[in-house]
Length: 361
Ligand SMILES: Nc1ncnc2c1ncn2[C@@H]1O[C@H](COP(=O)(O)OP(=O)(O)OP(=O)(O)O)[C@@H](O)[C@H]1O
Image 1 (cartoon, rainbow, N blue to C red):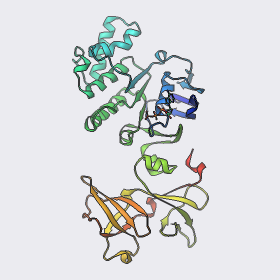
Image 2: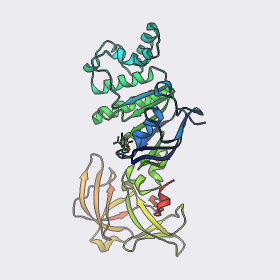
Image 3: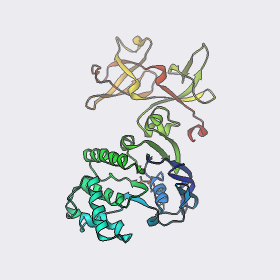
Image 4: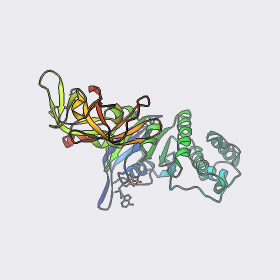
């Protein structure tokens, strides 16, 4: 049984339909991230699960029980929202104690539970400080302590680390992941940051225009995206639209100007979009100009950007396509304007169904 079941949930704000009959099963104890661009419906989805928003149709179940009509405070969910602010002038302990006070717990219970929650987020002894006097990362940890102090069955996080700078964000991500694992608490997080989603999640649901386009582990989504949208939202991919030619035993992909070996796609039909990840492409200096390319694909370097460890090449292929490749650290650097040969193994080619139905599950 799933911990949370979102069933056929639609939400409309007047004329705007923010969610279109969304189905989502969250497994017990997993960290599931809802990832998508701004305006895709992520916060609306979390709002419906938390009870802060009412669906126009559909229902929410937790542990098999329909909770659609239950108000937020009766759902036993811990919420950390970017706009679900702490009380800045109150002490850390007061902030963390909030949910327990609302519940009418005794003073001794509250004190003990607050201290326990602060220890979990590594803020022991901070209870007496004012929230205002803490760093951004510490404030986020107070918000987490406030959410977990009530022993929630589910943790809901909406862009919880959005206000933190990159380095601090990465630190708090690791802490959040450790805390979630040690508590074994089912967690749903919303973010538009792909790196954050990859770092934290057991599974990721990619949302696009109010629909879940694909759900899977980070590996599955990266290696086997169902659509161009997913392929490019989670990383970068070089894409060509063309046909699969099966004459001569093996399958070859061609768009007229470019032709290379590929595997058999999982769908019928010969129209396809071929995708190749930048890190799968090997870039070698060409002995001469384009004509000397031999087996590989001829290109020239439009730009070489050193990223610390790897170099990103912007490539102009002889066929007219503009692609991106990432060099391996052990490869000699190649400068702008140089002629190169691109090679990749056939298994690096992932074929997408270009028909509209093929893009949605
Ligand atoms: N209160 C509202 N009234 C009208 N339209 C709204 C309201 N809230 C959200 N929307 C619209 O619903 C759609 C989904 O919004 P939502 O906030 O869920 O997206 P999001 O993916 O969380 O975006 P972001 O990452 O920018 O927070 C958007 O088109 C948005 O403009």
